[in-house]
Amino acid sequence: MNWFSRFIVSSIGQKFVMALTGLFLILFLAVHLAGNLQLLRSDGGEAFNTYAHFMTTSPLIKAISYTLYAAILLHTVQGLILWRYNRAARGPVRYAVSYSRPEERPARNMAWIGIIIFVFILIHLSQFWYQMHWGELEMKEYPSYPHKVKDLYSLVSFTYKNPAMVLFYVVCMGVVGVHLWHGFWSAFHTLGLGHRKYVPVIRFVGMAYAIVIPLLFAIIPIIIYFRSE
Amino acid sequence: MKLTLKIWRQGGKYKGEFVTYSLDDINEHMSFLEMLDVLNERLIRQKEEPIAFEHDCREGICGSCSMVINGRPHGPLKGTTTCQLHMRHFRDGDTIVIEPFRAKAFPVIRDLVVDRSAFDRIIQAGGYISVNTGQAPEANSIPIEKEVASRAFDAAACIGCGACVAACPNASAMLFTAAKVSHLALLPQGQVERKRRVLRMVAQMDKEGFGRCSNVRACEAECPKEISVSHIARMNREYLFAAVASETLA
Ligand code: HEM
Ligand code: SF4
Ligand code: FES
Image 1 (cartoon, each protein chain N blue to C red):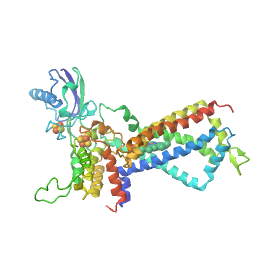
Image 2 (cartoon, chains in turn green, red):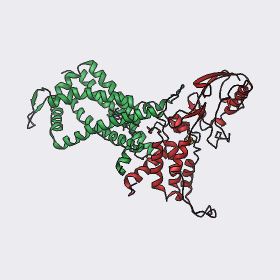
Image 3 (cartoon, chains in turn purple, red):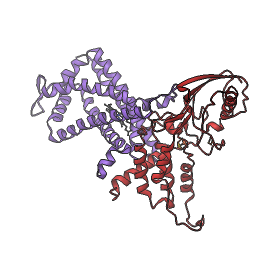
Image 4 (cartoon, helix red, strand yellow):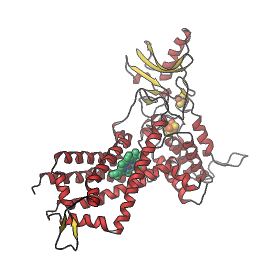
């Protein structure tokens, strides 16, 4: 094996994959949120629909989105591999009495939490991403934009008039928050950035990120549900 | 004190099961191991097989004693080995469940004794420095900054007991290995083998079948020497530099 294969299958290398893909997904969440916030403008969907059009057509964004699909798959597959390996590492007999501190709960359940997020991502993609790419969406024209664009805005607005969909979305954002509560700090630690000067800052930013970002995501469908259109 | 003990027995006539014992004359000033000694003397008088457990120094420095007490390696007290745990930390009438450390890489030999030679092999893979033979070198000939020396000493306090592996939900040996890598990477004497050491020790750790670290930090909470997980971050850093950033191809 050459040095790279040896590194990437080593315990620390596998964690390195989790941390890099995880951090990429964290960055993506912020960008995705900025786009979603356009849904709250009362402009008949112009800002959101033209943004969505740009996101599906720009070649640069295309390249980034392929990286994103790869990151999600890599993070999920690697996460599940680690989970299986780690369960087996306990050995043939498990403890009769198990003990854990409350603050360890998110970290101990990353895989379950991740599986829920993965299922959410699949449902979410089939609802919007699939429709945007291959579904039959109405076309809309805005005076200040050169092309006709697909009306994703109306689909989103329609979807979140259903309280069950709103609830599902809000719960899943809570789950993402728990994943980030541990994951944000953990990724830096994995990359060796567990430095006594910076750890308090990383922890604080991580916790703030884990609360604020999912909260902002979750507020959007709630506002859509209650607003009159 | 009256106590009910549920102890894992494995080997001899026991296939691997919990056996319940009642004790009713335990002095609260006894250590946990002395309490087990009392039970073993009774078992020997009754011509029963005594409970096998490891111990040596009984003063918290050798790392031999190893058992999981009510789900916690070395019991409920912070920064304490089993041999230094006293019965006054339990209540009269308590039921105490005692299990061996559980890890695929630490197979049970008998009752509460597990084979921790995987740790020896990790040390053999790189936990050493090269010095010239002959007269012992003068201790103060290499000046070391106080802060660096203290941090290296914090890592060197690891007694190799394996409680970190036992406490980790993944049975990962990262805290132990990181303590050793960190200790030597910080000191000038450890520079010669610095890159090779971390590559080899991590490779050996992986080969032994320990789990992969998820940064849960149960190890730090249960370590009798309170070794900090910041040493794990340092080892990750050392490993990344050695594997990715250095010219070392091995
Ligand atoms: C919004 C999407 C997601 C983000 C932002 C994210 C982020 C992260 C981050 C930053 C980490 C910490 C990495 C480390 O400790 O070095 C992590 C760990 C983890 N993630 Fe995700 N993740 C996401 C989705 C998923 C999915 C879909 C799964 C599917 C199973 C998953 C499974 C895991 C697992 C198992 C770990 C723990 C790995 C370990 O420490 O052993 N994650 N995630
Ligand atoms: S790091 Fe702590 S728990 Fe692990 S072997 Fe060393 S002393 Fe024991
Ligand atoms: S017997 Fe030596 S540390 Fe407990």
